[in-house]
Amino acid sequence: MAKTFNIQESIRLQKQYCENTGAPHFAPKSGVCWKCNKNIYEELPKVYHQLDGSTETIMCGISTEEAENQLVTGCPHCNRSYCE
Ligand SMILES: [Zn+2]
Image (cartoon, rainbow, N blue to C red; front, side, top):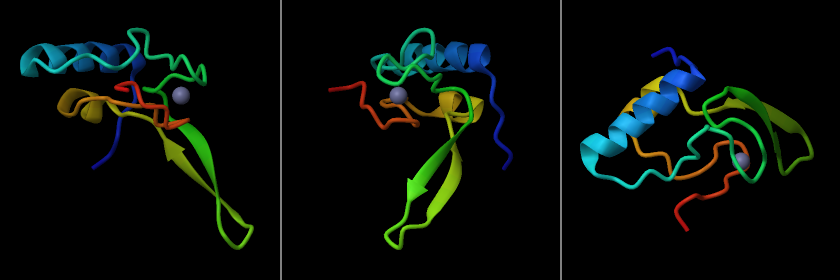
C-alpha cells in the first residue's frame, strides 16, 4: 500500500487517534522532533551503516496512514522515544 505524507493532516489524525483511544499524545504538537529538529511526519532519507562498511539509504517518516491508525511514541529519524 502506498504511503502518503502530509504534515498537517498527520498532526490532525494523530490527535484524533489519541482522543478516540484515550491514549496519551506523545508526538510533538508541531510534528517537529525536539531532539533532531526534523519533522516526524515528513519522509526523509535515513542512512544505515552496514557491518561490511557499506551504507544503505532508506526513506523514513510517519505516514498519514500510520498517524491515523497507530500511536506515535518516537521519532523515526533519530529514534528518540517520546514516552520515557
Ligand atoms: Zn528526532
